[in-house]
View 1: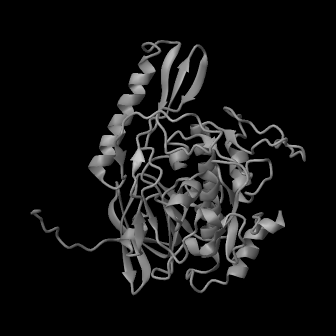
View 2 (view 1 turned 90 degrees about the vertical axis):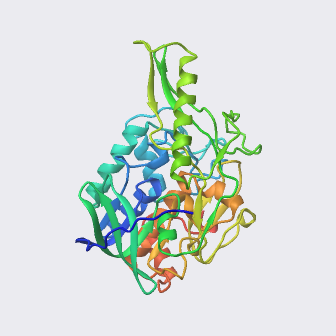
View 3 (view 1 turned 180 degrees about the vertical axis):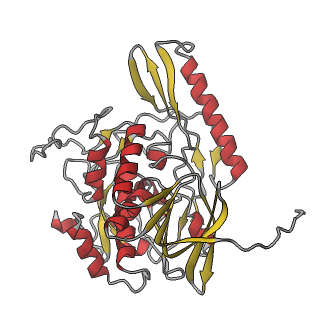
Length: 399
């Protein structure tokens, strides 16, 4: 039996109003906030950490997976093209797509359009782009709850150094990676039942070179010819939805990174542990169960409500049109889910959790709410035209 204490009821200050509140400043949240801000909406981007980028920067998963179908045919455009070029605009770490940049060639010889970038540089460059577009970024802030009127979210309750306060808004974008806002708002969600293996990626400087050490791994399928062989650190798997468990995972990651680092000697002027992941490297935790649930068998399938194209980072060939219906549920019409917690089947989840699909869904959600705060009433043709005008290729047949 659990004991309870009664928290005193209190009035919260209604501190401000925003057209759109984006919760989570990972790649998907950044894309959503940037798209909406560029369409002249007043946007608040809420982030519990103190940098933009989520797993792509703070998590040190610094591989911008391909913007192509794996064989050299580009399928991701719009903000995806902009973000990849921004990530390596001041230099790159590895995997530079030299047949693609600086000027695309028609002869890629099967080279994938991907790049390795510096996490800290990319985080600050993204921050500068958001500020330039007029977005308000609020670091060190949790979204603690939502207040609904009928089926619509009216306010987001946040908590930070200023205490607990309410932000009134017309629309909310869940970019938490864990569908936290979806769960708070009463939208149907699903949990990834297999859990996440421990990963402990870090950066090490030795013999004058700094390199990413990919210790541990997410589940990697045998069909992925580009992945390093996974090195299992332990057999335990983590749901990512329990605070004590996530803390345990983080502590285990720290220990594994340090143990691996010390195999090459102690700290010296020529050997340093350059960076540890600042957030747990969770891949699949909880997602929205939305109006549509896409699966892996729908490769090359025409989607009437497509919001953009993605490839399959694990292998060459497949192209998917992402449906708008995977971003929201009619039960909460002013809430969209983006990034790794959109509505897809478990097998499709592994494809849509990475950077390019996160940007596609983020740009689509930010653009959609710039047009209408009720996604059930939005004319998809208008959304597609707006995305197309912003450089997004909507259907595979347009390539």
